[in-house]
Image 1 (cartoon, rainbow, N blue to C red):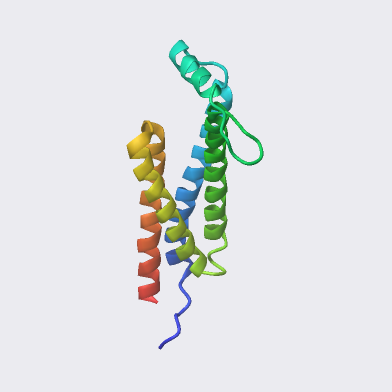
Image 2 (cartoon, one colour; image 1 turned 90 degrees about the vertical axis):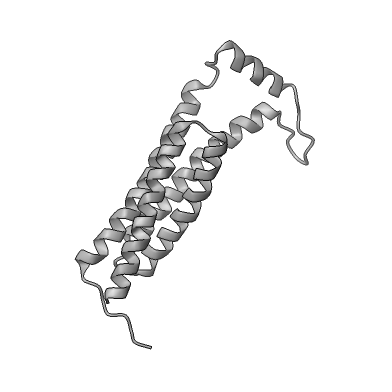
Length: 156
């Protein structure tokens, strides 16, 4: 088994840039999601208000707090935004420090591929266009990072 040769900085930049692009896309999606949720809270059309009022009538029978389905809907939505922010930030940081530890770029690429591919499938099934576009961009960036990482490893 031969040791991997250090990769020139120029060839390391491509996967890191691709992975950072994917990570920043998730950060932006998280911020937009949270901002939209906060901006539209309580500001709904009649049909949405009626649906939310119906959800507010149903309490969950769980240990601890017993939120309504409306509370659960709102809480999950906020958690989605926070999760997008957290995963995106972690991926950006992993790519940022990947020059010191090249395995981090590969790990960040895989995290991004798995997270965005699953999110893309769920978005296709249940969500409107904005998350499809954002997660599609992040997935392409992650795959680009993986391919570029593989190429730099093979060249070395």
